[in-house]
Length: 556
Image (cartoon, rainbow, N blue to C red; front, top):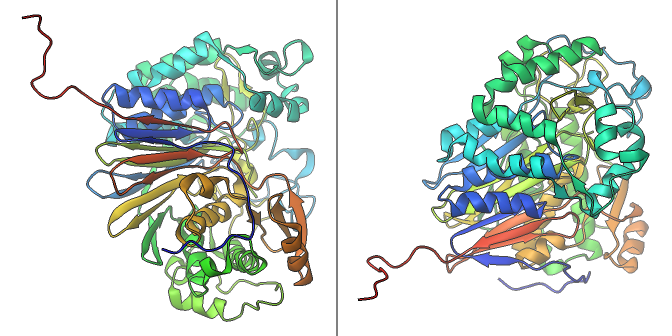
């Protein structure tokens, strides 16, 4: 593959890691260490990924928790792909008109009076994360739950040193954290943000993790942790009841599959929008010589922007929980449909797009990518939705609640409107790509609506622009859903000016989406792991192995 000339230049801030026996990449070094510990103990990628996620609930409490939700894309050593949907659901008492909407304008359509779908008990949806992680471990893991939980328990009991990233997140959300006594005591000691370098100990949460290690997910869904949650909901205006917890089920789904320039692309299906719309956008872009245009050129960025606007127009009309809304997946990923949409693109001018078919999230999420020596791979994105979720802690448990109700459209009568038991939709994009039947790469990132456009760009960077894995995850990004076109700083001013001349409403963004991490599967059977500058991401590679068969130490 010829590497195309690059118009935008940038320097990578981190270095990749390479190993032969396993790779763990997360958005925190201590979580990567937890997963690596499982691989070194003889566990597989599923064991490692679940250990990473539990550890992240301790060291990235602003992003992920057992009361959250997420999607796990698993490729097993035998080649099967499984998507486990542990997304949250609306409580049984939820109704389409439960919030008082204050606007229907673009960018404000989810605003409700008193921010009740953002902060506090009424913003909390039925949690699916713990069920999803435990089901993944039970079905595909090899280690017991209590062993997988040990790194997280130790981090919670003994504490860890807060990073500047965590400290800054606390500062950004200090006013909402201060409303909850437990969170204020934890993250705002003495009324000031927890400083970078300070040790954070979470004793109550350690006790909850120990209970889960003993009783499994039943501790939450039918046990004392669930009672603490539902009692708090009942006393503070929340909607979740014991029946909601007991009825929660993880959904097993088949991935969406597409093709792009000789690669097979796999991603999660609805209610995740990423698999469908990444395949849709790749189908559109396949008709252009993206590599020949050069990375970051005005033409290349213009085509990305138009493809994004097309996808978002269709997404708004058709992507939702398939149990409640018919989603025309086959039409959306059809190459003939892509050709129809592609033919309408004008290279010289930006367009406004309407949906071609009939039929808001928070950026505060985390991602884990793990591979083992046997060929098992996990790409999983998890969240409590907003920064620190609903900024509410269940007293005595250390558990932070999600604010997933924000993902529903608070206006009745729409595809994404609230309904009892309905799953939230998501942009999570735990993606994998194969070439000639062999894994090429797996990747994902946090970033709400900006997740799947950023994942798309990384795929294009790898396939069309011939980038290394490190370059692909760190490369400057663009984003639009039909309004402004956000450009990160490394996109040249001359390109921004040309895009403005074509009718794009260009704005500069310090960051588009969050910290991507990825694994590449190399021809020499080694693994390369990479994480970008946008988070505390850290790849940990494992090489070496056991002694040669028959070798022993003897003094004779």
